[in-house]
Amino acid sequence: MEFIDESLLDYSVLHSSEEPSILKELRKETFQKILHPRMLSSPLQGRLLSFISKIINPELILEIGTYSGYGTLCLSEGLKKTGKIHTIDINEELISFQNKYFLKSSKRNQIIQHLGNALNIIQKIDGPFDIVFLDADKSNYINYMELVLPKIRRGGLLISDNVLWSGKVLKKANKDDLDTKILQDYNKLIKSNPKLETILLPIRDGLSLSRKL
Ligand SMILES: C[S@@+](CC[C@H](N)C(=O)[O-])C[C@H]1O[C@@H](n2cnc3c(N)ncnc32)[C@H](O)[C@@H]1O
Image: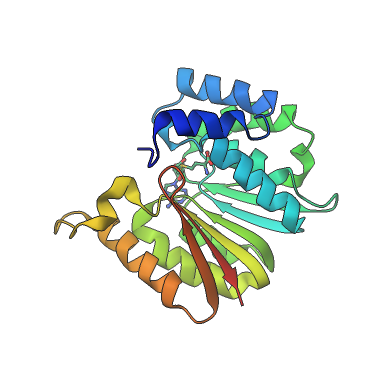
């Protein structure tokens, strides 16, 4: 779901820096070969992730939910020469696809893939993180936040995707809709946490930026 008129979105994409060719190729092949291509970050969101990363010029990034590697490559664009991005996904079938594009990128040696449940893996990766991009199973967003917050450096950024959940956050969640309920609670928590300064951007499915104070 997009929250602005499609023609305005097209105009915004047209008047933003162009998606690099490797990412265009990755997007096309994701749609051809991978299940649920809607999970891919959009070109505009991808340029925003890249832009934020270039401003911060991070030494260490953590991405929770790699999927086909689009967000990983966008975020890696701003890494310091010595910097690393850790990216976690539970789906083994995605690894060879990710590798095809990670190998093509100039950042291959800076990307560290982890296979397994992020809840376990996050605990094994040392911070301090300059950026954490939260983009995996919604029902664990609060758990992920609790795990990563102590590992984000002061001034570092927690970026949370899908926080508008196709607009479902506006209505009372059905009893069996845990994802919506958790996202509603999560959005309240990142707004009210005195250690965070948060702005929810109505881009694509909703992207929150929370700066650790
Ligand atoms: C929305 S996609 C990530 C999209 C990607 N960040 C991007 O920008 O294109 C969500 C991913 O989270 C992964 N995932 C779901 N539950 C997970 C878990 N418990 N641990 C690790 N990864 C998980 C899924 O396999 C899926 O690939």
